[in-house]
Length: 178
Image 1: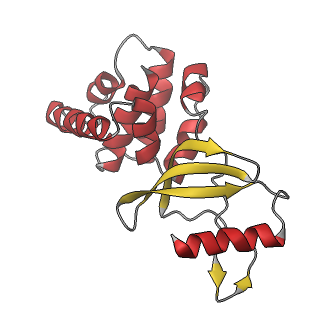
Image 2: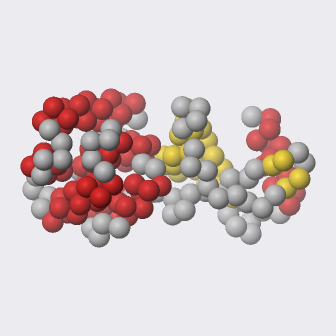
């Protein structure tokens, strides 16, 4: 399964066992020959040791268990912007399919200062987008990980041009009540 291979490589990166260039190179090498696990490629190239591999495999199993053994949700929960961008550069249909549930640029968060509505801000890096959990007339609701608070949260993405000023005010009121 593509997600498990990507997840292994990302966890090796997150554990500071490989750098971003090695992560990308490993993904590209694995795409060229999917007959063996990406973990084997990392060991063969001398980028991780057998002991490192065991460590990452334990992390992988813990993370999968936390997300009901769903590799796609687990992968989405650990990938941050720079890693996501690097992986998306690997040209492979399986990888692109695995990444298809990731938001293209992340939802726009509405921030307020007092009662004044500001311009929509860029997505906050404190959040890791996990999966879409619903959609409606105004937009989508995403399951995300708040990295600052170390917990999962729901974030609402409003479709550009779909919300009136009054609708935005209701969303802000909803946010403050929650």
